[in-house]
Image (tube, rainbow, N blue to C red):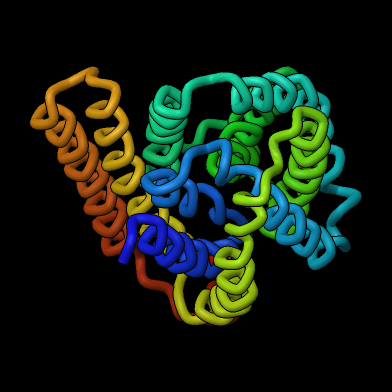
Length: 297
C-alpha cells in the first residue's frame, strides 16, 4: 500500500471520529482531523477540501439551533466583525508560506489552546466587545490556514457563560460566516484544485456517518467528560505533529523533539487525573432529569 493510499485511509478514519465528536458537542471536526491529516497532506491541499465540508456542517448546526439565533447573534457580532481581515491574512499565508513552516506554526498555535481546553480553563472577560473583535481576527487567520477555530471559540464563549443552546447557536453563526468568507477568499486566490476535490471522496462519507453517530453516543455519557477526553487525544496528536515538524525543519534533534511530545502527554495526563479526581470528590446527587441536564451543560 502506497503512502498516498495510507493517507487516504487515515483521512477517512480520522474524519469519521472527528465528525462523531462534532455531532456530539457541536465542534471539534477540524481540530481533530487537521493534526492527523497534516502528517500526510500539506495545508494547501487539505484546507480547501475541509472548508467545503465545514460549510455544510456549520450550516446544519445553525439550522438545528435556529431558535436561539437572535440571542446568539448579539454575542457573536464582535467576533464576526473581526473575521474578514483575519481570513484575508490567513488566506495569503496559505498561498505563500512554506508548507513545513506552516505546519509548525499550526501545531504551535493549537497546542496551548487545546491544553487550556483540556484543563477546563475558564476566566470570564469583562471587555467582551474588544476581546471578541481581537479573537475574531485571530480565529479568521487560524481558520483560513487550518480550518480550525472550534477550540478558541469554545473557550471564549464558555468563559462568558453562554447556555448550551446559545453556545451552539453562537458558534454555528460564527463558523458559517468564516467558512463562507474563507471559501470566497480561496476562490479569489485560486487555491482550489482537483486534488483537493479528490479528498472530498474520503471526507464526505465519513461526515455523513459520523455526525448522527456522535449525536447518538452523547446521550449515554456526560458531555464534559467526553469533551475532555477528546481534547486530550487532540493534544497528544498535536504534540506528535509538532515533534515531526520540528524534526523536518531541523530545529531540534529527533530525541529532543520526541521528549517534547512525551512532556505534552505527561502534562495532559496530569490534567485528566485532576479532572477525574475532582469528579469523584464532588457530592453525589440523584440522577434526576433536571440534574442530568445541568451536568451535561
